[in-house]
Image (cartoon, rainbow, N blue to C red; front, side, top):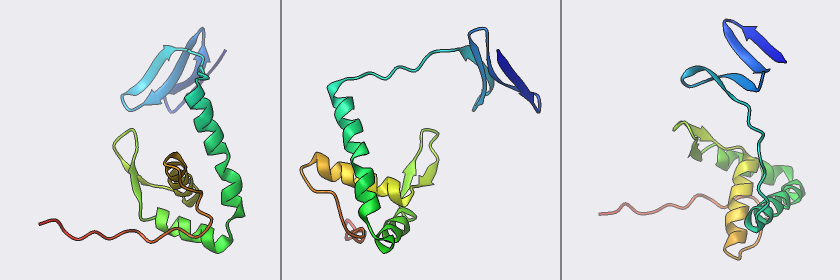
Length: 121
């Protein structure tokens, strides 16, 4: 049993319940063990993502800095509706996964420049 009280908020687990603080305030819920389904598509997705770390390490520092710079201009909306910038690695993995899923190749250079589109009339 591990329950801690910090500034009036409980955290931890006891008796099959978990205490945490969420958007709605203090929460107590039943402890549920996470399950990791092993469908063929999930195994493929995990293997694909895992194969990208060596490709990232193979980039030069200048190329990684290029990905980091581009990532600082790209905002993604998180589960709470807040826009967050990606890290260079996260953008590299995202782009590489998308390219591989449509039959492309993992980028082994600095990122391309962001495309510019004419205004719609």
